[in-house]
Amino acid sequence: MNYIVVGCGRVGAELAFRLYKGGHHVAVVDQDAESFNRLTPEFRGRTVEGEAISEKVLERAGITEADGIAAVTNIDTLNAVVAHIARTIYNVPNVVVRNYDPNLRSMIETFGLQTVSSTSWGAQKVEELLVNPLLRTVFSAGNGEVEIYEIVVTPEWDGRMLRELLGIGTAYPCLPVALTRAGRSSLPNLEICLQACDVLNISTTFEGIGMLKTRLLAGPEV
Image (cartoon, rainbow, N blue to C red; front, side):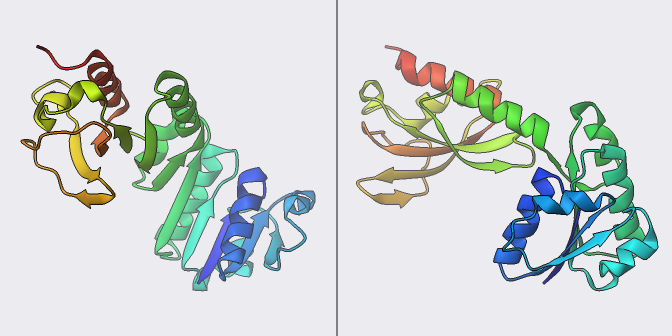
């Protein structure tokens, strides 16, 4: 596959190398030639110096044959413009935009672009590790608005129904994804009786997992 990475900062350099190691053809675009020094010596893709909003520069990078483009500079407006050009003029099928300033995220999303907000996502990850150290995130959708968490059933919930633990009907819904017991996983129903040390995968929001953690530690109502 042919990919273009616009912006050779720390994120762009790492992304370009990961794509290259994955066996793809990669071109990296940056207006500052010294930025290419961030690329690891093992990188064997192409580098293109120039303004990313220039159609000539993008065409030198191979945008007419590109399967995807990632605009990952630290300037949100530039990322949005490059992505818009790639999608509307060159019909690049897969366009991903990095959002640096959370205050500008909604602006980028109005273009209908696939957006990764590294600042918002990173802050949420740190918050989760601080606030919910007993829970492990195994999948994150979007920019972390919905995630799948892995929790271990405590002895206090042994013999109680899954419905009770999830607090069905509360303001923060938690949806069961899988239950693993003695090494075997299954799709759980809400009436299943839990056993201590069951491993549950739950889909919910950050607020929802906070509520679930509180219920898990408090134990069931008598």
